[in-house]
Image (cartoon, rainbow, N blue to C red; front, side, top):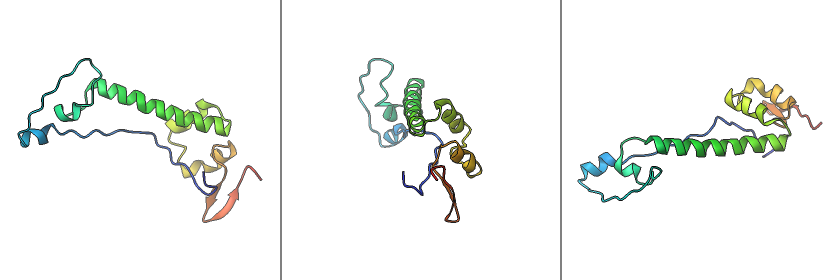
Length: 123
């Protein structure tokens, strides 16, 4: 990360667009063959909202990516994973009010205020 950069981690989300209504208005019929529960590729064309199965698999994927991000922060900053997870869940990884605390605990290297260098654990 750039020495004067920062992190603003608020979590991950996913959005799926649905086209069923558009296809109906255009009078387009689809011929779809599907086997099994976890076949979400065609859902945007056949449904007007996300299925429970697709919601479940997207949630698992996003949680996996988020855990990977927090694990990377934890290992690179040499702080416990649970501490990073706690700050992420409380949205304190991106709070200006917590900069001194996060800097002291090595979550970030330094903080700047009005371009004045205030604190650096490395010095």
